[in-house]
Length: 549
Ligand code: ATP
Ligand code: MG
Image 1 (tube, rainbow, N blue to C red):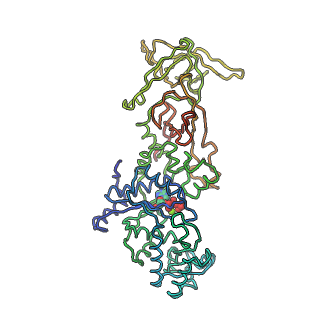
Image 2: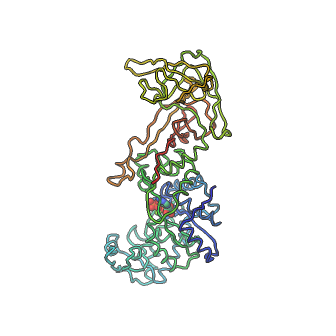
Image 3: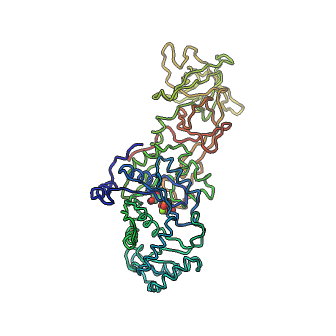
């Protein structure tokens, strides 16, 4: 795998820490997803960053499920997350953890805070708590329960744990500062009562730690040296530091924030992605139009392309939106060197070659890739009746139209030169057959007299081709920033998927990905395709629409 070599501010921090021999010069990073959805391309950036740094600095990267909110989490997500990270080409080795494995330790930390007079059980209702919290310009008010004794707090917290109170009646709060300008420090909730079954701990807990408590302390328990997270957690850093400084923990992570990846023409919030799945706007988390890793994989994007993209966008300190065309550029660049090139006709019209012998079949060798002979070649069957793209014939061609037209000659890739003699139309005037004559001297698509023919088109033999379903995709949303002006679902693109029936050459290379000559990159749909009914997804078109700024 290519090394991450470009410098950035995170590496600068790490280099300083190594120089100062902090943590004995060791680097431990982590990727901490909440298993409440499938991973998306934004996560890929964080994965590439964390695993990439560990690799570059000879450290390790942990995979930790931040599974502290059982009502939204599911084993299906845990499994998909692992599959997606492996597919991207990263490896956590034996360092696979769950925040839920620390529930006992975290509970102990809460007791430690209570005993030190730094946490209390609060009975305010959520509504009251909101009022007491104050605003950005107004200090908060102290809870009337703030000065409970240590004994009373220990007793109530024990009862919370024992399941003696209903959901939402009491919480445990850190006692920090109700007048802090940072709202996160205004006595944040650290435990809530939730009588919910947890996918790993079962029914043993009915109190669960809040993310802001569990997350930094899980990092500290795992002795993570550099906790890399997205910018919105910058304001949480003082709270995270407060927890780590006020509790005896094994490690002392340093948090570094970077800008999250945003892409145009898509959404990346897990809440929205979940809604698209649940309300069936897409066929599932792995719908090829989704920005999820599983969707991109099914669409035909490659791990190399995604890693190269992540590397190219780098890390920044301010949020911005990346053009999805840049991601497509890296997909095209990767497939360009790998995918066998074959012929498929997406919008077929029949061509009859009148002077070609009935029942004759000739085979032409077609290389799979002009630059990589090692990819091999195949025999392409040619016969009297072939299909070409409807767009490659014009009855009344404009100037400089070099493809097939009455009286005009064109080169059939690998095979012969043909000239259109006439067309056959149906009752409604639609052309149903194009008739041509071929030049037997042009065998192998070369002429003996060396005359110039400008156009080369692809084709398939009518009786040596298969019907296949092809799924053409556009962006899932019609505008660059879905939801900017109305509900994001109103910006869904009604033509994001078009299904067509195409003709493809008979003997396909043993590959999942192909370039269909002149039509783009395609891959076999990993879920719906069968040998009886092959289905191809268009991965990307051949031409880039990417315009660097
Ligand atoms: P939610 O939308 O539920 O807040 P999330 O997108 O933050 O979820 P997590 O499972 O908490 O999802 O994310 C795991 C890690 O991936 C976090 O460290 C988070 O910072 C990082 N991450 C999430 N989205 C992006 C993004 N768009 N760009 C870069 N990193 C991201
Ligand atoms: Mg999150």
